[in-house]
Each structure stands twice: as structure tokens, then as C-alpha cells.
Image: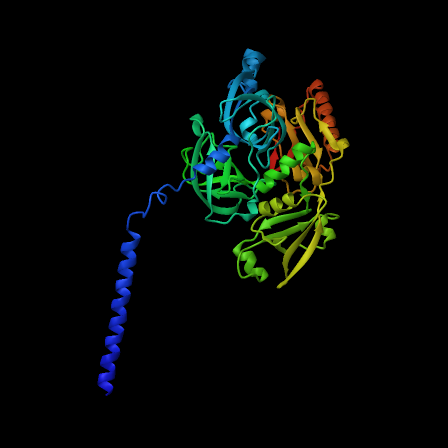
Length: 484
């Protein structure tokens, strides 16, 4: 009986196997059959495009820009006069896209689209070929968002509703609508490739949406639309070695766009919440040393005294894992979450400290304003002639994306002036002069004025002038200028 039982068991297994193979074969054949009816072939994104496309516009900008002369060299100017090295003006044109987000004609686009020199003329062309002038009512370089208002018209423009970008998931289908290469309004389709992408170390840069929908030059400022016809992002940039789409495009999330639109309509400036802590991305080595099983979150490297972080009792070494339930992977994503939450509200931080997780509530406030008395426009016969500087403060550090707490920051350098020719630029921090610490703009101005007077006296007495010796920080690295 035992051999017969084994034989019958093998027959049963073979029968099941043959049955399974038959089912698999029939399923495979069924998958390769032609569509059962015409309706199944006619699936299309056209209803979404018809709903969204009228609100996507072309943005044309024409402005004057100053171009530095190739002969702007001190020696050549001495030999041939100042006219040889005078800056020249030329007309520059820019083309991009935009999205109408309010019936009265409020348009969202990118700052880099409309920033084309002084006295720029902006023209908006709708999908139905109507043309209108537009003016800028708000722009922000850090997030690359600009808000325009259409001049004229009946105040009944087609517009797109802003969707909730936090509802997006990787793999969701999206459409990109814009004017690539100036060929006219075009639509491309793709998916959400990633969320919370940071492509810049700039403070305030958003946690971008990444998509593989074809985005090319001219698409900047255009719409990223979900299958509900809602605006979920403003297409901003691509990663490409040729300038054409390689399937890696980035869009500013609609939840951040909403903050700027509401601010523009209310006539107030966007205030970014100030945490008051120096933050760093968590590396694998940092995670292991602090007891985390993987590199995630944001490391608190330093806490500014009196800041919201200090009041909430953050400590160096804390790792911020989430804000209001949203996981955080880098400082840019953290700033994005705080900005979309808004000043005047509270945010709940999930932190990891000494092997334990805990929650802290932080009251979000705006960065304290800079003291106008700590600003200086430097003039005279000094290396910083033509520079606008300010005593470093939390407001200035936040504006420039600096980690330094002391020194004098360069806010602006006038083209063609000595400071510009010597290579000073916005964001440089002057820390010492002749080995003496520089703690305020007033101190720096006084030191420069005294040295200039001393050099004039030395020249009159036919003595060798005392050289300039300046130490500054650029991108966190210390550099010494001089002797000059």
C-alpha cells in the first residue's frame, strides 16, 4: 500500500502542476489579446489638459542689462582712459512659462524668468493668444518664485486650483505644461520620481518634487498638474548635460507656492520662521556614533542663545527626525516644513537624543530684524570701496545663508568699483583687519578710514604705504587678502 500511495500522490501533484500551467498559459494569452472594445483604446489625458491648459501662459521679458567691458582693467584704464573700460548696456530677452492661480489674473512663475535687468517689460500671452502687460508684486530668489499681476482684462481669467502637494506619492501620474524652447504650449506626461529633493545648499531652497515628465528650457514657471487637474508644482529646473530633458526635472511644491500667493495678495512680505540653530545633514558615521540605525534626520550642530531652539531646550547633538509628523532628511526640507507651517504657529519636533525619542513644541517666530544703524556704504580709498556691509546678526545670517555669528557681512558690491574689481562679493564675511577682530560695520568703517588717512600721509612724506591686510570667510572657509 505504501508504494501505491506514493504513486497516487505523485499523480495528484502532477495533475495540479498541469492545471496551474494551463491557467498560467491561458492568463498569458488573455493578457496579449486585443482590446475588447473601442472605449478601452480611447483612454486619454485630454480632459485634464482641456481643464488645465488655458491657465498656463507664456511669459516674455525684455530688459536692459549692464555688461562689464572686457577692457575693464586698471592698467588699461590708466593707459587709455576710463571710457575704454566703461560698462556697456544691452537688451536681453527672456522666455518662460507661468500659471494663473486666481481669477483676477495672479500669475506664478520663476524669479529667474522675470529677472532680466532694470526696467524690465513683462508680457503675458494666454493660451487663447490674448496678450497683456504684467507687473511683479512679489519675488523671492531663494525659492525662485515670482508672483505677477496681469494688467487689464476683464478680471475673469482661467485659473488652476492649488492642490495639496503633501498628498503626492512617488509613482503618481502628472502632466507638465509649458512652452519648451519657445515652440508653443506643450504637454508632457510622467510620474512623481521622488519627493523632498534638495538640489541646492541655499538656505530657504524648497524640498523639490522630482518628476520624469519632459521639462526643457522654456518650461520654467510652468505647471505640474495631477490627474485631478490641480496645480501641484511649478516646474523650475532640470539636471542635464545638454540643456535638454534627461528625465530629471524639479518643481516647487504647491504648498510652498500657496504661501507666496497668499502673501502677495495680502501685500505683505513672506516671513520665514527662525529656528536659531545651525543644522547639518546626518552622515552614516554620525548616525552610528549617536546610536541611530540609519542616516536620517538633521543634526543640531549649534544653538543660538535666545533663539526659539534655545527656548525649546534643543542641544547640540540632537537629531531632528520629523516636524509635525513629516520625516526630515536635510536642512532644506526642515526649512520648507517650517515655512509652510508659518510664523505665529507652533510646530512639533520629533528628536532623537541619547538613544531616546521625544517631542518638543517650538513657537515659530520671524527672525529678529537687522539694526539699520549697523549698515554701512563704504567709500573712500579703501579695498572695500563700493561695498555695502552690515554687522552680522541672525537676520543677516538668515538672509545670506551664513553659519557665522560674528563679523561684518558684505551685502552688495557695486559693479566696476574697487571692491568688485578685487573680487569681493555678496555673502563674504570680514573677520579681521590687520589681525584685529572686526565685530561691527562701524568698527570696520573706522579702521578703513584711519588706514586710508595714514596711507595718504605716508605718500605725502614719500614713505612706503602700510599695506592692507584683510581676513574674510567665504562659504565657511577663511581666506586672507593682502598685503594690498
